[in-house]
Length: 126
Image 1 (tube, one colour):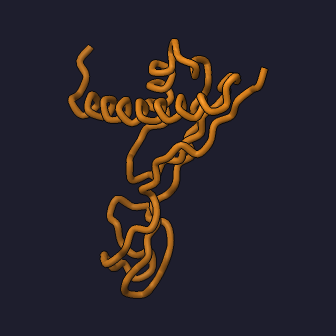
Image 2 (cartoon, helix red, strand yellow):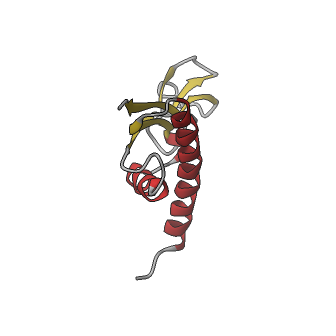
């Protein structure tokens, strides 16, 4: 099977991010032992362009044979939002071209979509 180079880079990028997430999950899990991890929840801004299916696959691979093995990763995507410096419109950017939703100015400040953090873990106590 031949993989496009961009696909390989994307997978490496997401595996690297997921590795950091797994480290954070395991560190938090140590604080609540003895317990079994059921779910880890992350928040990911759309500017990161992460593919949830790739993240969950990487999570399964990277948690195998760890205290987090068998748990599920939930991803909450946060939209890209902005504020226009010209007309002060605030809203979600949905197009590939980042412009004001009202006056179409490109003079905007990105106010959301950069988030990437472990939001919570769900554990089951014995």
